[in-house]
Amino acid sequence: MVVVGASQAGLAIGYFLAEQGRDFTILDSAGEVGATWRERWETLRLFTSARYDALPGLAFPGDADRYPTKDEVADYLADYARTFDLPVELGSRVTSVTRTDGTYLVGLEDRTIETDQVVIATGPFQDPFVPPIAAGLDDGVLQMHSTAYRSPEGIPEGRVLVVGGGNTGYQIAAELSGSREVHIAIGSPQKPLPQRILGRDLFWYLDKTGLIRKTLDTRIGRRMRANEDTLIGSSPRGLRRQGVEFHGRALDASGSTVRFSDETEVDVQAVIWATGFRLDHSWIDAPVFDAQAAVAHRRGVSASPGLYFIGLPWQHTRGSALLGFVKEDAEYLAQQIAAAAREPSRPAASTETRTA
Image (cartoon, rainbow, N blue to C red; front, side, top):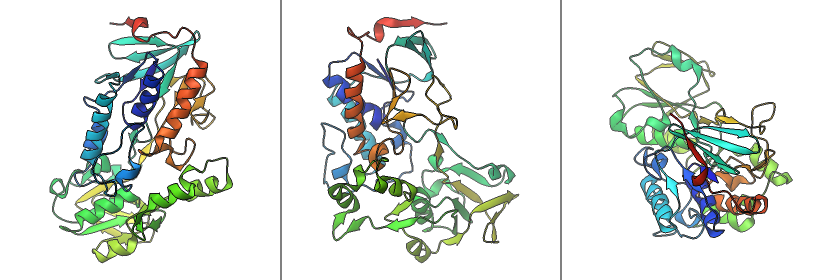
């Protein structure tokens, strides 16, 4: 069988598949495990403590109460794949998954793999989204999505606008405010939550109360999803104390000027779009999408036999897309895969057909 994606979701499901003794491969387009984390901005830290950042079978190293850096996460994921000798094939970009005659054809640039079962573990951070208004800015204004931001040294001197009021936007704005004038545009204010309460990590309370595991089938789960846009460890008050100026939603841009819903405008030298991501499953040709092109599934099990998804936002609970909690969905899916597997299972490697 084939797992597409070798970040936390793909490695977690790989752990359980290896425990079952299954013949599988994990395909990833990157040149190293953990590349997505390593490519983020230099000072990025998780908002969950190391205690809640472990995949199944291997504790996150070091002080359990610290907040790991992005490079520590990348190192952990690479070490995880080595520790359990997971069959990761790097530099293997999957270009298509097609349902045909009861099996799946997984297309790569140099070959095709035929397999009975496929797990899509590409996660929620697939296609960086930049709003159309970005096209109105002059070439002289530096623009980048937050995925391209590394440090203040890569941003020109002068006024900087950060668009997006999530954790990423707040953290980047806070870092830049130490060396330049920073403005932030926020469409929908998010509820700030402290990173620690009475000396304990916020996720200690979510874990002990069971809130992190409330499902979409419950009233509490549905309410949590409706109000899931929260700031953890950041707040508007704190950012204002650092001199950051707030604006409403960014509505329009022309030249070097951006206009906002609060009827203000500002001339900028740089814009960082902390505007999130969009899921992209356009490369999957199988009957698994609803009328809105969203994946139709039940805890990752799709209507197309043998095709599964893991790591989606709110796939089952609030923790489904989080590093330290994806293991619960991974274990469940591995059980479903075992139950549905054909006997004897078909080794993916022996069914490859090469294309020109």
